[in-house]
Length: 213
Image (cartoon, rainbow, N blue to C red; front, side, top):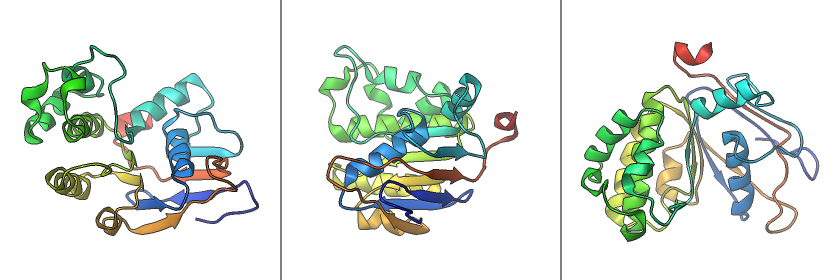
């Protein structure tokens, strides 16, 4: 990663590469991840995934399929949301349900999310992400995925990330997760809570043939 000027960040990530984002200002890394996922607008510059931008509805729809998003300590959006609702939002619900069984949370699907532990909610989102990867997502964007987890959940996350065949961009200060990555880049900002707009962020393409259309 190279920084040019006070408000620019340039980062190129090759297909299959695993990159850890770290720095004093976690908001900058979060803003970058959300912008890559298409959840935040890009204030300046350009973000491409597999050589594609996200300016048109078709490009944004493709980006949503190409990138799997694992938010920081996900919380239920609705009071009555159930565990099953998380898996249903996956691009491949059947694969997500299978992953939930492997991760030990399949029996929780009928329970409300507000009654689950942070680790259980996180594992449900891991299962959702695995479903997205099974559907063809080639990029995983993870924001502090180990934060607040119990040791057993942390170990499960490490094993999961080590096995997933994706290009990984992960915001983390966890040394164990950082070791999984090919390189670590720092993120800074002019002042706390004021992330800079990325100038250019490019991700190599590692997607199955259906997503190339």
